Length: 135
Image 1 (tube, helix red, strand yellow):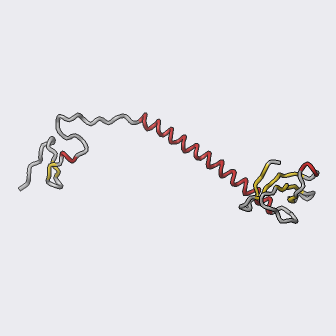
Image 2 (cartoon, rainbow, N blue to C red; image 1 turned 180 degrees about the vertical axis):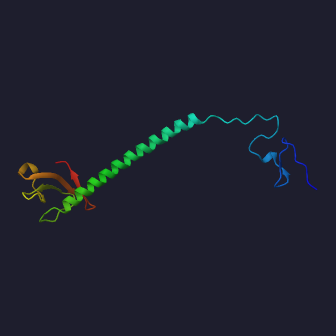
């Protein structure tokens, strides 16, 4: 014997064979206000722009940090590959020059005390990295 279909205003769950109107997250009786779908396009547009600006700002920040790391790597490689006949001391500043054969060499002589082709001044950090410093 089959049961007759319940009217639409009756909330009957066929799977559980129970009335479950009280379990629904929305009103189910005929007198309840109708469910209105709000236009969320302006909210989405506004927040998409905000999110995109935040992501773009973070990208610019990360790109700047990456570019700085690449520059530090290039300087570090340049100084470590330079010619020098002494053991550099952590925390001291040294000056990098190019010789007549365009080969880099490290010196304790300051740029104003000689006529060498000056590249830059570098300090050996406690992590044993060469950091470019202003002279």
